[in-house]
Length: 611
Image (cartoon, rainbow, N blue to C red; front, top):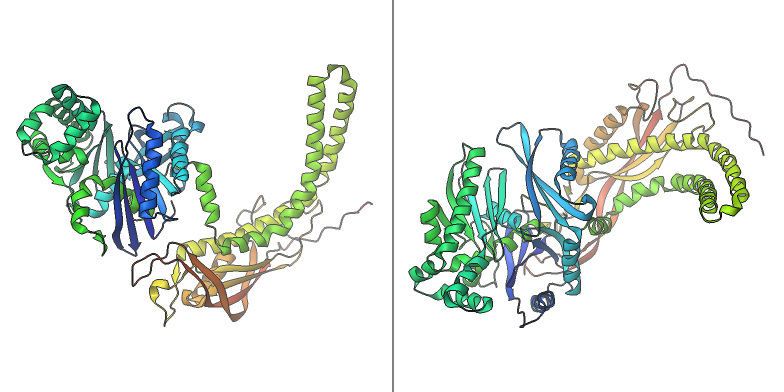
């Protein structure tokens, strides 16, 4: 998920919507705003329409605008399972997890959105993988609702992960201790345990609605009236009487928690369980925290203050702390939006994720694509047209056989033309070999620059007289141009064969002055010299270039635009969209790379070209 400087976390519950707006400046996180909006369902009314109305009222009052929003699905909507896989290289983890997910996720795998979170297993030699999957229609329904209300939804997570992200980030506990989090929602209860980087979770069937039903049975009222009685009981001084009314439901909840913790202890015998963090409006009932502490024999911690996260000026701190008990999930979702969360599962429909990624591509990527565009277009336009003709003939033949059995002779005529077209297409093989050499060289050189950029990370530019909070973060190198020499495309050359004579590749790279140009230039040269010949060659140890040199450097201004709709004024702490032109001093290096030529190579004769 993309990181944003400011984001909203949206927790859609059964009876209300909780939303928290968080800002992240470097390592400092602050709460800018929050709101709790009741979902008022008229008698006999539709809950979906009531939910949309509540979202619209909340969005209008809080002025969400284009601020990114991360929402959550509840545990009862999401299929969850933890599996164990061997400890393998980072590149292979995603492949192994997907294979495991395809076997484990029930139903048609192509009809779900899924994600995962990995943690080290207790044995130290494997990984525990928490798999999450939701029916695509459920995720799409949430997207549709937020679109109707004008919210800028950028991610969909899980309520239990949201609460974990908040407690893990903000609440301070001893590192060696396993922390228990218990969140009692209206329709399900989330139980989460973590120690260090280890994470374990389970969804329990007993929920706040079971407590409401206990009020229904005792006072013989409707569910809505019982819910109202439960809310009024928060301010009651008759804690003992209230506990008596709901004791059966509480006992069932405590038993479920004890069974789950017993299972966890069997799997993690060295676990040290002492602290229980409770979350959710249900725990506002008088005497309930004390009851759970007595039954479970753990130190109960109520979410009533922040340890690391700050509360911004202008936000009523006392009111926020009073409501914090119900805001844990929304806080964690907002942290995920700003990139401060540990678990970053995103169940957003894949097509919308891709659309967002494409919108966020930077100009450097356009330059790289532009360097290869000309040859790609020629290849596709020529070979593609022949391919289309061939394919059209085959399809016509199939159609004739199926639909017009009486026209078999015409179908045979069409099929007779297919081999001729195939031969025509085969004539383009040498041209494809030529293109293969070009693509192989270009991909290798661009890969070197990508590796350097990735290893170096973002470079902060020193603007001297400018506020450093506005300083641009640039990458270590940018591709200016890539000129590849002509490569013989006739048959004797073949794809990825050694070249028959000396040829030089010219590469221009722009390096910002604050990125230590000379040091990066040497690194690029070393990497280029070490490149192997791409593709299928007789000697896999051969190098692509026999020599690489820097043949000149010039100093130029790089001009670019910075557009940040979520920019926050560092003085007023208020949103202030940023759109301005900037310049950065950069060194433009010209590298001359000599393509390697085997000593025995000789130039093959040019082919005879027939009209």
